[in-house]
Length: 160
Length: 160
DNA sequence: TATTGTTATACTCTATAACTATA
DNA sequence: TATAGTTATAGAGTATAACAATA
Image (cartoon, rainbow over all chains, first blue to last red; front, side):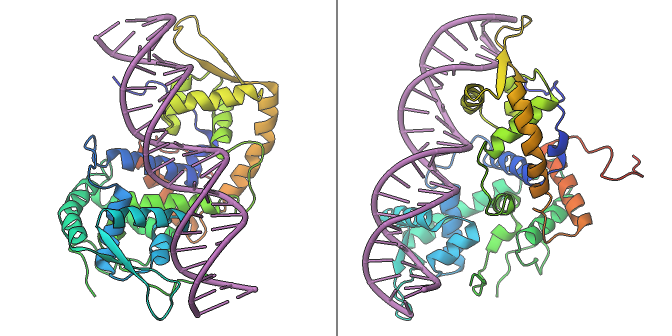
């Protein structure tokens, strides 16, 4: 049994935002895919494919900033995706230092089948919160990280 | 300049709790000690010393669960603290499998001087949120991770 | 048999800096 | 000079499993 008989004194840490965020993030990740492993691609890779699908031609560095992945690491991730034929890159003529990302047909196919299960699993992460609480939590997190608020509350994916 | 001219479409990810938590945790950590590095001990080590100070004799596994650190990793962290004379451990007679942790005098001294600066830096993490928003965010995070609510919010005048 | 902690290994991610090529 | 990306390396943290000692 994994109950928690030991009530420990958390001191200042119970009021520390950074600490609470770390625990919450760890718990969220544990609840994601509870048990089931991702075989074809990591969650990070799926996120990248999702964003490249929505933002075709996005520059690698922009993606890295959005996902808080270091540039050096992003290079390796993109190379791994390229080696598996999931994405391609091109050098734009207007700035030949940049790298633009595109999905291959295989990448399109993979993310189209894999992403719905990510969404389904994600929707089960907020167990323990009421629906309005989850909405508030997400709104505050978006503000905290400087992400623009959602214009359309909660229905389908929005288009431009 | 590090402005963000590129507004990228986040799709489903803007509404995913796990994703928002990951970004928030990364941002929070970056804002912590903005620039200044911790020299004597890592943030994890300081957290452990703080909790051992508040919960003398706490078992290693209980601490690991509270901090979401894997047991195998906790072993190495505690060994490192022991080697630096910051904490000690004992084997309780009532369960000789367990390991109880205690601060040495040096550990007491170190955490007593280092912890206030952790708290001071932590209090600057929530930039961008109003004070009531930060309070709400922390309350929701505590609920999300199953941590008991704070009985006395932060000032006087609290009731249940 | 289950639990606590240890050891070992592999992997992911971070941190850093030097490097190139372009701007 | 500054920026975008690459390469390389060191270190922290995670994931996993086998193991010993104890319950």
